[in-house]
Image 1: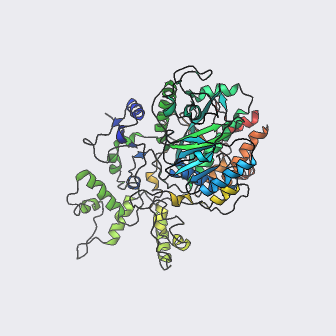
Image 2: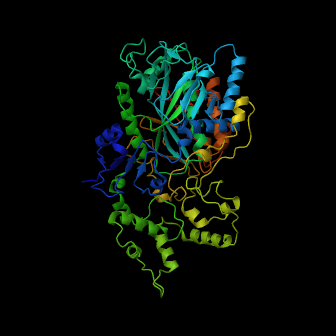
Image 3: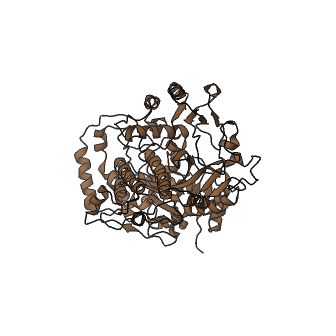
Length: 636
């Protein structure tokens, strides 16, 4: 009988994940019956500790990437978008309402409040949200500053008072986004989502009526009109995205342009943190983007949800979320080998977990730690010798210590195969660089990693041990260089833009661990493109060896990279400027509605390379039957 995959849920939830996995034949982890590392998926609503990422084993997956709080916490999101707007201009980053973080930005907010009050003849409304609360808790709207009262850190935004209404009711879109990887950035958006309605008609004369201004289901399901018929909205407070598409068909708008603008918001928001998120290939994360559409059909980003709710409150939830969770599991692309867990990996003599080795004997010590979990802590100092007994028994010196060359020999046997000539070359580089003096004594940041520019000087980075770097598959972390500023932002926003480096403001996890890096090639996730178990498009590879992520996984549509130029720009260090140029080019084609096939200048340059495939294409997310981007431009 084949072994089953095992899932582990934090605090016994969410129940929908348990239901979907049990239906797929998984088993739930039982702490009393299984070893500590005997699981394949650990799903939790809160964040993982740093040590849990470092201790990941090859058959294990987590449902969160590390350090994504840069967009999921309201104040961090505001700072990151402010930084990107100041660096790359407001023409692209114009999808977030004017935002201030109080109490720090109170002076800036007061200046903007007074300016708008004197300059505009119409009323200006503001909405206040606690930075670390969800489900609509603590939110209120005001017009007069005398009503601004708060007792915690909050964000205050211009309230969009001209939102698009359906039968007089306000609504927003919950878009489900799955980030397969941040290095390289790989983004999928689910075809199905939710449209969340307020349960009372929109009315600016009653700002304190949350049932008319907030769309949170956790609030509106307790409203007095939740179960009554509400015109075209019907009962309840949710539609599926499919039903919303039928509504759009009745409107005289460029529907493709609307979907693309929403897609742009998602991509541009993720780019804001992509270079600061550590690489952890055994993670896949689901985000919930809340998008508001105004009366002119312009989409606005409200917030990004960490662990979007998976509760089932109505039929729309059932039809959307159950398939959503199943597709997220498919995105993790488990194989039959993963169900064997450590037995198969030990059989093939791969004896190291997903971590970075900083010392030649690190695989041996990690294997020791792995066995200590299974056997307890007995005789930990005596267990290292059996582990070293391979085809070559290490020799001992007179003092009984293992010779360094024997430890290195065992170390090499634990690593994936590498050509000996390349190892010798790397060793020569080590000798040649050992004489270089290091000019920094700064402590390494456990989150940003040893390639972070906040930790080391350029000289130190150049002189880092090349052998380990080579064997660890070039797992560097980069942060973007941001220098130039745009003059189109408001005076108040410019005064607040001094807080641009959000990474230093994000609290690190409690434990101090080794730097996150991309693990060795053997410990990457199984090839999602070549598996036949799930409904995944076959793999394509460019002439220079770049793997093209599948266009579709279940109902998830790949939205980034969306062409060859963005694929190239997302490899290694993310080239943000190239990505922004390609986004502008694609959106411009949709605005103009040209009949020629879209091909940007940068893409033409890449296409001229004889070694590159000419059939790279992507689906245009949004429509019911998403067309290929190339076909879309041929038919417009």
